[in-house]
Amino acid sequence: MNKKTLLLCCAAVMLLASPALYAQDATATELLELFQDSFDMIWLVLAAALVFFMQAGFAMVETGLTRAKNAGNIIMKNLMDFSVGALAYWAVGWALMYGSSAGGFLGTDEFFLGGADYVLYRDWMFQVVFAATAATIVSGAMAERTKFSGYLIYSAVVTAIIYPISGHWIWADNGWLAEMGFHDFAGSTVVHSVGAWAAMIGAIMLGARKGKYVKVDGKTRPKAIPGHNMPLAALGVFILWFGWYGFNGGSTLSGTDLDIAHVFVTTTLGAASGAIAAMVASWVAFGHPDPSFSLNGALAGLVGITAGTWVISPFGAVVIGLAAGVLVIASVEFFDKVLHIDDPVGAISVHGVCGAWGTLAVGLFATGVNDPDVVGLFYGGGAAQLGIQFVGVIAVFAWVVVTALILFGILKAADNLRVSDTEELIGLDIGEHAMESYAGFQIFTNM
Image (cartoon, rainbow, N blue to C red):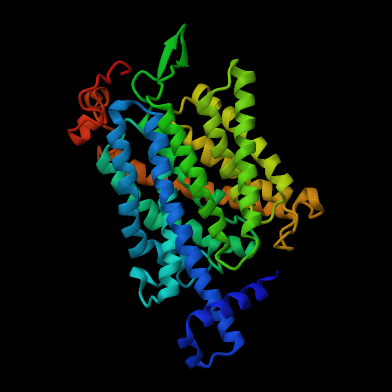
């Protein structure tokens, strides 16, 4: 059954159920448009709700992989980066991302959703949850030592300015990278890498947690600081995987696009392959199948497939996921043991490195399915698409690094970035919020 037949059948059923529609004397074409708009509305707001639920997933992952004395602070950051981000994206972010383009670099109108109708409201709702995702990625990498007030300021700036401008380049109709043919279907670079590169700069400028790196025989060695609740982290990953079907599937932007099924399949295969690859790689590297790496492997596969989920075959999704699962472990080890950047949850590796990998993979594995203009190197498209993908990855990396340096530099100069040593020692639940997440329990054995 093709899309037109499906819509006509639905229209017939709805007409029988709603005789009042007869009075409108609508033509078949008008009915098709009416029901297509209705299905699009239902699917996009449902997908937006799924993506919003990912905030809970991020909160659980970050809480589980960090210490108990900071759990309430993690929850507050994940609550507030969405709340602050929603207002910032309503006031400024949407306009910069989707307003009338100024040279393909940024939007110039529709501030505060001016002139909005139900279509714009629908589109804003779907996009604001993506903006919040980019913001919340930073929370994990900067966990356990960031001032809450500074984090609120960061959340506003990234959702109002940093994310929307680079997003305009790629997802706005006249964005300069979009005009080049850059393809990022659901946001491996637009969303995930933006959050991760900002997280990387934030983690560098913050410095490591106390006791994370120690001197041994004149060499700096990383010291593991275990999270306090692996089941909670696992629950977060399952929530994120579930929400990702809205993230990727909703990016079809249509409830009548039958390729939603294709997107769901490639998303599933990418995640499953990433989890398996990370499990096997950790088993080989460390002598046991590590739960935290396996969980991050699933997320790495999801991030990796997000850019190309619409234009890559199921086989390509498996390859991309397998590579992402191995890459995330190598990247976490590199950032920790070589660069000595303290990222408690591996956010830089999962969202940044694997986001870049997934974006570049479009230039290798795109088959031309659903978009004949996007064909990768391995399917006869030559290196052109790969080159365009590379330009986009580097451009977004440069934009985020420069703007994040300015943002976090200002916060650091204003002494609004890192908590005091005492607050870090007793935990941010007490130091920042004057409460305990686990009242009555002894939680300080892993300080």
